[in-house]
Picture 1 (cartoon, rainbow, N blue to C red):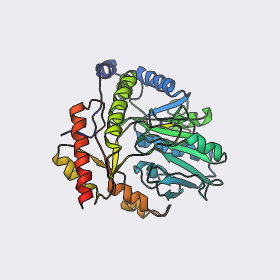
Picture 2: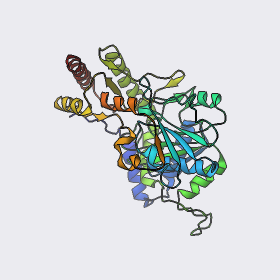
Picture 3: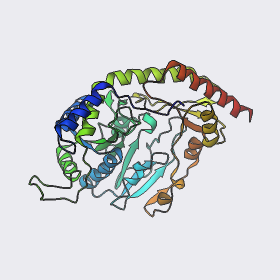
Length: 369
């Protein structure tokens, strides 16, 4: 079976993890916390980065940064076809009205430009679906009074207008989960735009403790990354160019092989953006649903995943009084017709050919129906 993803773990990832274990600094203190933070900060070209225990915690801290910086904001615009953590993060501890918008069928992202709710007490949280980057700086120029946030958990290494994605908003999140381009098993990071907000987030991710031990000044959380996680992350960041080069080759092969197939379409990229090449996905026009596609691919020895479901499929979102949902037409269609394909760095050419040929057969099967 070709898995949907497996992490690329060179020797230094394991070497550093063992070094962290041997040091006995296995919790939230140790040298690799600072080393990984410095590496990531340098790569992103930003000053304020805080490592945390996972991407969901990071996205929750993005919501907390908004609450800290702009307590007047009461509404959040979000896409209606994203991983559930993007919605949950704004439901945990403030009664935001979450207004979900249907995605575009070409980019699979949402274009919030011209939305009638922009401005005033409304913020926008951009989600770069599957690593397809939205041009956030362009939006910010066109809407200078709108507070912008980013769930960038799928966007690391993507770019908008020459900048790393996630670096131009008030706050953004990263994930280092096992299926992400750069991983620490679990793990994540928050990118902040100013020192005051950074100091607040740094405090509350560590139980809200003040500079004096065991004296707490905020209601906080235990969202700290461990030194072992940071050691693995350090090894990953050292070989990041190697990982990105291989993933670019894989995505280029997919795009070249599948872009002209009848009944198949790919994510369209926005101008002045660079896809992060996280997970490659195809849209199979006329597909009866993901279940049928997954059974077909599984029989070919290929693991796959569905596109994210619209909010109406999630009981706690559907029944939440804080959520105002528009139409879900495109979100439902994308969920029915899109299939996420294996995208890990060590995919062989034989495996890639097998996947491509299987998608071609599946497209013909749909066409005959």
